[in-house]
Amino acid sequence: MKKEYTLKQDGFRAVRFEGTVNRDKAIIYMGGAGCGEEVTVEMSQYLVKAGYSVLCLGFYLWKGLPNKMYDIPVEYV
Image: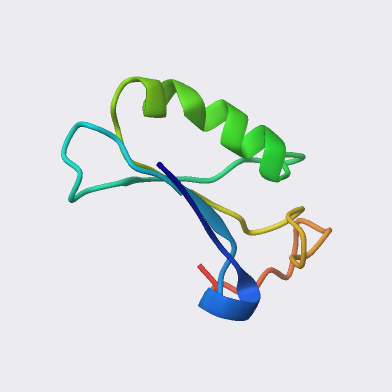
């Protein structure tokens, strides 16, 4: 199951995948330099396929988030 979180409704951007192993816990997954939403979600899929719940957290290069890799407010995360 996939759930999307938005800035407007939730105050942060993320995509969550519910796994089959330890459903009450999730791995927080963040992409690195140059990783927008599509790449971050794609790279997390090996964990999802292994049965883990994963929260792909956007911090830059996602719609509505900074396009630069500096001065990102840490309060957001």
